Amino acid sequence: MDNGPFVCTGCALLCDDITVELQDSRVTGVNTACLKGVSRMKGCASPMPCTVDGKTVDENTAIKEAARILKEAKHPLIFGHGNSTLEAQTKSIELARKLGAHIDDTSSFCQGPLVEAILNGKLPTCTLDEVRHMADVIVFWGADPSHSHPRHLSMYSYFPRGKQRQRGWEEDRTAVIIDVRRSDTAAVCSDKLYEIPVGADPEFMGALLSALSSKVPKTSFNMDPKRILELANILKKAEFGVVFAGLGMTYSLNSLDPLFSLMNKLNETSKFHLIPMVGQYNMRGFDHTLFRETGHINRVYFGGEKVEHGPQQSVVELISNDVIDAAMIIGSDPLASLPGAIAKKLSKVPLITIDPCENLTSRVSKVTIPSALSGVECGGTAIRMDGVEVVLKQIIDTKKLADEQIITRIMEEI
Image 1 (cartoon, rainbow, N blue to C red):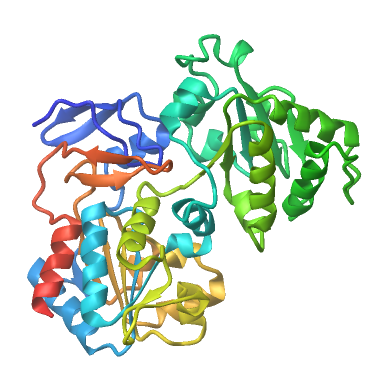
Image 2: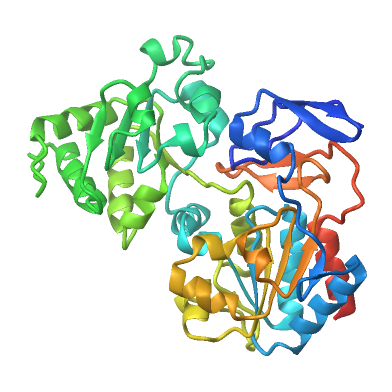
């Protein structure tokens, strides 16, 4: 077996410098990774059993039952994919086409709009490696990577001494935090915290746009105009700026127009890029894969004469309107992340869960099929939060099928 280094699938940073300690074909120690990564790579605390109607069965029986449920459903949904490889995602889309099914992923209610804007060329972006080597101004907007991506600051964005930033954070980098509270990231990155009220991101973007245009900025929450002008001056002087956009920003924007205007203005005088702070290790991978095949990143229905796309095809709307009559969940736990009333409705639909670990969704599923843990028990490829494709290597052997193989077997049964 390969001795590494390996890629950690604990989050969308996909750190590629991980070494492990093995004993009896188990990962007993993980070096270099953060706590999230260590937990992920050591495997499931509660591995998911293979079941039908709560009873333990063999793999073949579970796959046959999953195929029957999907085949008999008039409006099946295939959902999840954030913790699945590109290969599994491609097979999942193929299965959705074959079934005439609805297909969606978690980007439908988080970072999807930003990824879509990047893929359509509406937002300039860059790689994390470029950030490490060239970025001199970094803006964490509605993001707290100290918790969400623990190695972000040390690997790429703030502390590293890059090729063009040899003096690192002490002299060569300025970090700005725009958030609704003093996060742990703000505590680390000096005193450039711009604390705004919840939902005030569009207004603050407008005020910053005024400051960048040499106008006196005004806000309803009475932030000192001098501070906003000071920030505008920092941004104007950036040689290579990056905005790391978190969920705090995404959820505050009903439209991306204020963000487009701000980024366009910034790029009149400096060079700015945006990278969405994607959480699950391969959520962006699904968006790229579906976009390549359909021109859409999520919310797709293959049941009509043409591929249908729109808000009505989102997982939230489909469940709210009682459209779907079966769902296959892959590498996700929607019952833990969807609003309570919607999660309750989903739990009443025949569910098939494919995942290495037991979770809230699997506990109410009609069929559960345990899969190999990607990046540990099986290999594949994934796309990092910045759009860079990364190869995952297998570390240990397992008898469990990879999610790609499970989906292929289900398709064969159908």
